[in-house]
Image (cartoon, rainbow, N blue to C red; front, top):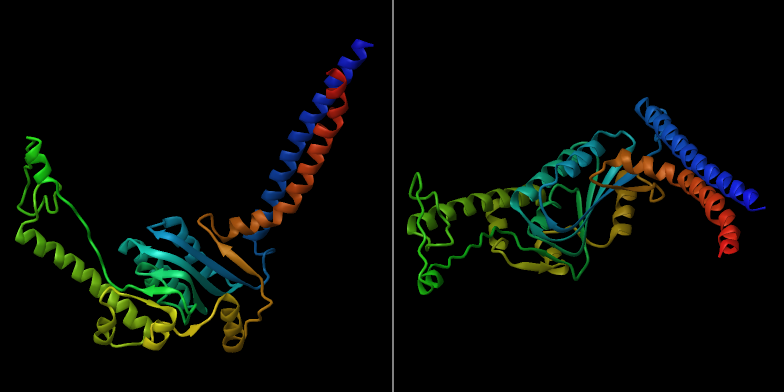
Amino acid sequence: MALDVDLLLDRRRLKRRLIVWRTLAIVVAVIAVLTGLRGAGLTGGESRIARLSITGIITEDRKLTEAIRASGRDPHIKALIVAINSPGGSVSGGESLHRAIAGVAEKKPVVAVMGGLAASAGYMIAMPANRVFARESTVTGSIGVLMETGEVSGLLEKLGISAEAITSGPLKDQPSLTRPLTPAGREALRGIILDMYDQFVGMVAAGRHMEPDAVRVLADGRAYTGRQALKLGLIDAIGDEQDARKWLQAEKGLSVELPVEDISASGLAGRMLASELSSIVETFWKTLLSQSVILDLPWAVWQH
């Protein structure tokens, strides 16, 4: 009797292993087939709208910018929604997103929808949009560039610690943690900040169809509410994503019923493939669980 039980348990284990490997083989085969069909243009041909969600601190993300550019090349993507909830970030990170979004805007409609916060670089990346929406209480604007540094020479002196720097030029160690900024160093860094500021002002002027001098009046670094920004011409309307969809339908003929798909660093194709496979994987996973857990449960209870 014990031998029969051991044989049955061995058969269950073998069956479970076979199910796992068969499941993996089928999933891999389905991925290969769908990838081949997508590459041949035989699937994924439905019209849709892409959504780019930018949250948190903005930094450079090569994979994300490539995914944005891919959405511009995809003929089945009819528009791009840029959903922003960010306090800003690096100038180069904002510039890279701005350029990628602007590239899409040259080919298809782009709308920006601001959440609770869309300031500094978060405002910058909304500038290529054909239409910018914000809530009345959105904190936006903050057009400007900031560089912060510190130095601890006074503390080091009290501790009896000195620091030396051997440089190829008088500005190479500016700014430095171990000695104050020199007048020349301060002037050089200010030149960098002002040049970046001019670039930012140029993006806003182009995006909002304003004169650069008019932008500079508003670009003293202060933030605005959505309601204030609307009066100043920094946004186009008060609204949310649903209002953006209605605008796309009214102005661009894109139905509010079109599906929306999120862009991620893994790319649109990867997300679409994952979506198509989700139901298949779920079915196989349930099958696997039914074969392994449910069938083995009576034996586990019996053994204890």
